[in-house]
Length: 155
Image (cartoon, rainbow, N blue to C red; front, side, top):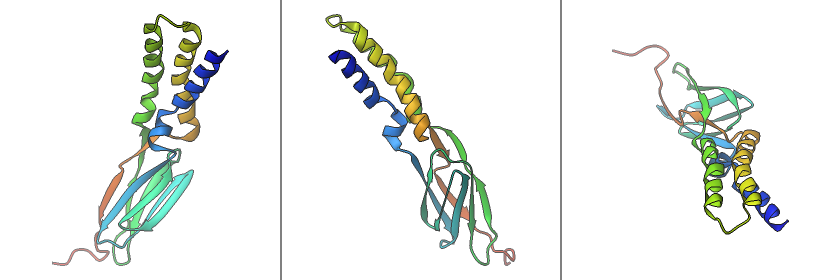
């Protein structure tokens, strides 16, 4: 019974590589030339705003994100932010099989509980990252916008 409890606790602690590595929110750094512009990210599931240069934090599970950068006397710039899968999320593929292989190499123990716990670790990681939104990553992480004067370039 102790081994089953240890295997279950181990699976829960090791699960969610994306959650452990970078958490539930994502920082996007926004700057503009000239600086001092208002930067807004609006998404389905979250938003953020600040004055450039700014670090804007949005939930990783937010989607359909668009950045708007505007300043008086300049044309507003609009940039889409893509959402993909994070590297930490893909690490869940390795956790279960690696632990399972380690357990299988240890021939001195009762393999049943440890093997089950090892295989659960990867599966729990997928579930945790999915529930917290940590399986996602936003791109680009750093955006620099060149603002154009609203009246056109002077010659």
